[in-house]
Image (cartoon, rainbow, N blue to C red; front, side, top):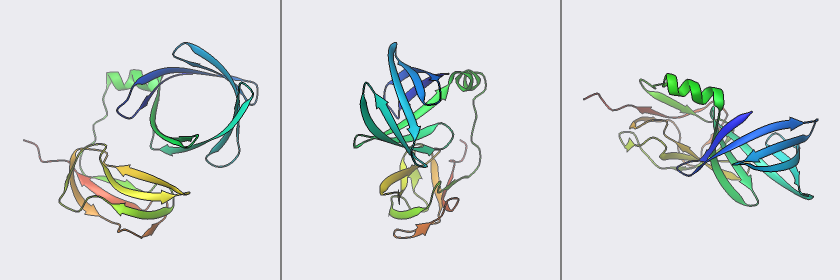
Length: 173
């Protein structure tokens, strides 16, 4: 399967992933081929062996195409789009309309609230930070707009699916 992978507001790489057996993968990144063994060792943890070196990677899904990847102490915010989705996106753009409710994707503790009702926010701007599994996850606004409702406060524990905030698009005009 072919993917376009980009770090948020960074460069885009073309990745081809081909499964070889139960745990083996051939990964081609911008034309460079790697052979790796990968085994899921927890809900978000993968044990990887590449060139005889073993390391762990934490992968936390962020929405449909987004991923936070922790590799060797570095956190990467990635977006991966397969070829089919990319072609469909080019033919018919999805437009969010009306208020957008943002929910917690996993249980955690709110460690920071960076906006209040009435504040203008940009798409991708961090609005709330939730600590989950000893990692701080910045939850961004899905659209340009105004925070209509802030449903959480600092120190609050949230469950998956809990509403964090609601952003309303600016009025037309």
